[in-house]
Structure formats: structure tokens, C-alpha cells
Length: 250
Length: 245
Image 1 (tube, rainbow over the protein chains, first blue to last red):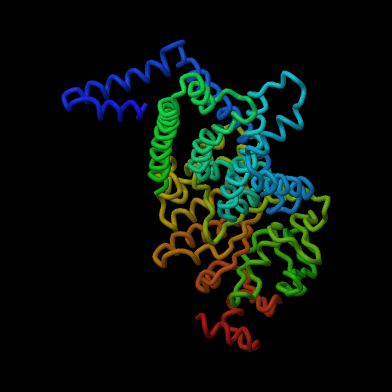
Image 2 (cartoon, rainbow over the protein chains, first blue to last red; image 1 turned 60 degrees about the vertical axis):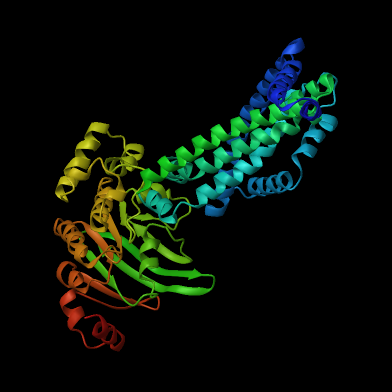
């Protein structure tokens, strides 16, 4: 695309430069998106990226909370020793190895039957991965609540689980909400490696279009623009949320 | 032991990693007693109080609350704690709940009582301590003294048989101490059994019927307030009193 622009800049007189420039852009957009309905690749890819992110996040939230509760329970009252050891090992291993590698192990070593659904493997893989990170977010949130809160609850006669449920978790939730949203935003971008396990995600769709049109610039920039829009809109909401949480505090 | 006895502590020893904090404490607390525990910091006063509702596990000895041995592993401590109110130095109100919900939460979960009944109870208690207008605000809207008054009636919501106070006025601005002590005084006058760890000697003198001097993990001296504050026969106590009075 830029080659064409260069050529047009050199070949044409000033009067024609602008017209040619717009024409070239429109042309490459047409070629990369409209011809043979190529925009459908992008839409499909975006859909898969969002599906993977959303479901992986849900898995991460559910198991992350459980893992964090196990870890804090061990730190608070020294029970659940073996579960705690397992969680610790899990978090160490998952956070200490690249997510692409984890996906590839899942896809090429574990789900080896033909017709294994790449999308399912990707959701599972990113779910397993974000569980480890979200567990640590939840744990730091739970541990950040003043010890007196637990003592106040227990001294009233509430048991450990009741105190956690009614007193500690609601307070911790407020603390972890902003980092959880950041984790979600990070996850959107991380899923761009899903192409490694034959998933047609947003990044992969750019690659597919490139291989059809032999034009790399246009599809890559389009894909980048879509990621950027998603993350900017989301971080805008996170900032708003943080401001509202702060306003409630004092 | 008499029928009147509510708390019996026998040979209580508490160690934190080999460091002895409470050293062979035995004491009987009767119904209606207002027992003040005074002494230098680090002497084990707070630890002793926290042992009474098992916020601290004891190393050896026996504690009976209303006849129930809380040092026995088979005892459900949560059942016993329902009967023991506790007020902390730093109030420990629940910041995410309104004052109303702070009061209602524990009885709603633990006692089979109708929500309207609990609501009425909460309103009545708030009126008693003059904070009814704060019922739907959050704890961060209250001053320290107001918070502590709410913390006291939060414990009262469970209809405890005994109230433990862990330096309830130590974190307060001086002008707010009085309002909290007034609530405690009213409680004591109504016959509530109370154990109060405090530095407020005036309160101990005026309200309590027994004063205990705890130092280096031991009960050094125990007497009625008149005798306690005029006693001359114990050097350590005399030394302590000369510093705080």
C-alpha cells in the first residue's frame, strides 16, 4: 500500500497527490475488506477473540476465587494444607511458563484426537492461565482487609465461612475490581496467540487476509485498530469505575 | 464455686513461641461484676481478655464460660462467643455496611429472629446511645466516639451475658472519651457483667467493683476500687499508680 503511495507521490503533480492518496487507501480497503467479503474473516476473528476472552475470564474468576480462598484460609487458620500446597504449585508453574507453550501442550499433547476443537482448547488454556493470575489478585485483595474485621466477625459468633462471606469478601471485592478489569484487558491482547493452536481469532484473521491479498499493511493496521479500540474503551470504563469507588470511600 | 460465677479461669498459661505472656492466672468473675484490668503495657492485659473468647489459643489451663469449657476441643466456640460481646480499641465496624446493617448482620445470621424485631431492637439501642439519626449512614461518617458507641451496641444486639472491652477509649480523642464511658457506665449500672482493660483510672474507681493489677503475665494485686487505689502494701502497684494517677 505504501509502495503505491510513494509511487503516486513521485509520479503525480501536486494537484493530483491528494486525490491519488485517498484513492489508494480506498482501493486497499476495498481489496482487503469488501472483495470476496473478506471483512467476514475479521468479524469471525473478533467474535472468537471475544468468546475466548470472556469464557476464559469466567473460568479464571470462578477457580481464581476458590484458589484464593484456599490460600488465605491456610494463611489465616492453617487448615487445608494440601490444597494450599497444590494451589501454590499450580500458580508457580502457570505463572512461570509462557502461555503459548501451555496452549501448545494442551493442543498437541493432551487433546490430540482429530477434530479437537481449537476454540475449546483455547478457552480452557487461557482459563487455566488466568486462574493463576486472578487467584493472586483475589488473594492480595482478601489479605488486604484489616485483621480486626475478621476478629470482629468471629467475636460476634459468626464462624469462619460466614465471616468471610458477609464481611471479608464484600470488602475485598471493592479492592480487586480495578486489577480484575486490567486483567481482562490484558487477556484480550494475550488471546492473540490463539492462532498457534489453529484458532481463527482476530490476529489470525489479519494474517489470513494478508495471505490472500499480498498486502500486509492494511489488514495488520485494521486488526491493531480494533484491538486498540477495545482496550481503550474498556480502560476508560475502568478509570470511571475506580473514580466512583474512590468517591465512595471517604 | 458459687452459682453466681460466670467466668472461671484456672491456671491459665499463654506463650507466644516460648515467650510467656500469661503466667498461671486464676480468677473468678461473677454475674454482675464490673472487673477492670489495669497495668503497664506489655503486661498481658489484652492477651488475657482475648483468651476469654478464644481469639487467642491458650497454651495450658482451663477457662469456663457460663459452665462451658472453651479450652475443650469439642466445644463449639461459636456458640459460646454469641454470649460474649467484645469491643475493640479500633472499633472494627464493618465499613461496607450501614450502621443498621452493622447491628443487624450477626443476629440475622445467627439468631432465628424476625427482621422487623431486629430492626426495632437496633433502633431502640441507637436511641439509647443517642445515634438514631445515623442509622442509615456508613461508619466512615461517624466520629471515633460515635463509632465506639455503635460497636458497643453491635455487641449488645446478641444479648450477651458478658461484655469484654479491650482498651475501648485508647484510640479516641480526649473529648470523646466521656461519651463512650457514659455508655459503659450505664451498662454496668444495669447489671451487665463486664471485663474492661483500661487506662481510665477514674472509670475504674467510679464504676468497677473489682480492680485487677496485671503485670508481667501475673495478677499482682486484686481489690475493690477503694482499697486498690489507696493501697500501699505492694511496691509495683504503688509505683504504677504513682505514674498514672
